[in-house]
Length: 149
Length: 260
Image (cartoon, rainbow over all chains, first blue to last red; front, side):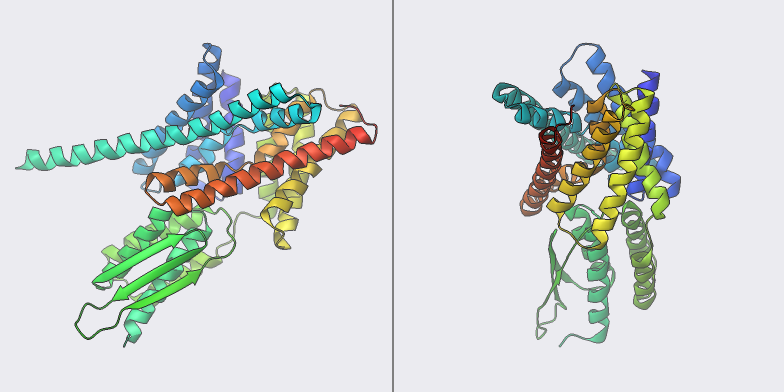
């Protein structure tokens, strides 16, 4: 687990360099990626499927990115983009390709579907977390103005 | 007629929008920035429609005899640069809250536009970090770590080289991933690597369309369906190019009599 955290941290830092994340935010972006990946591995170890694990990991990434974007007063995108990358199903894509080359139609279909579902689960997770945060922020603001009156 | 001041505001707003869009910002952020800059210069009617390939901007002074003005900015090519997004974000906040002059704003924007990404060597190190640590994540050994390090660094250098010559998205993804696969296969047959799959997965991680997927979703969430679809298609094209690059490389390798 600790090794997974370290590996994910280093690779997210690599992505941050490629995408030119501002210098002082690189460590924070790496932390986002590492925590997302940690959640993913935790779910995998505790026996859930790839898709659920990917969903949970992306939720964590979106949530922490939002917290960091408020803490560092910067756009959430700066943390989300490098943070989400370890979860993008590159391995699934590769195994789908291998199955195509072997001419194994069944394996292609199952690996391909799982890859698509994983990409979809990242998308849905980001969407869900962003919507919930938006809603909460709206409610919080209303509550604050109501308190003032 | 449009006066000089408004023309400058327009140029400023469009430049800011163009820079953000080119650096990979989401649509709502671009539209929001442009609207804020125009409103800060007291233009009462602003309507902006941004897509990944162009920005449309309409302005009106609001008086009875004024004409409506519409401007179109075509956007070509994009590369992810999160520092530019961050700096323009700060700039627009500063521009709207303080009374920074328009000329000063244009100078700042020019400075941001000319800011360079990290030096090439550092980026290659970054690419090597990504691919080598991913090889470890996917059950690679320390020998695979070094194979992926070399494959990732070489294929990223190739992608920078192709980028300078303005090759299109598909060809770039295809060639880079084919190169990464060949390097991995070469090292593997030379007896260096242990787990071929983890090396290849590690080195194609650099080119995955993670950004396109993320932005496609965020755009769709904000109701920018056109942009969401465009980015989604971009993600699919990149994914197909990567998969076919790896696939073709593996196929050629077996046809030439190599093992994997």
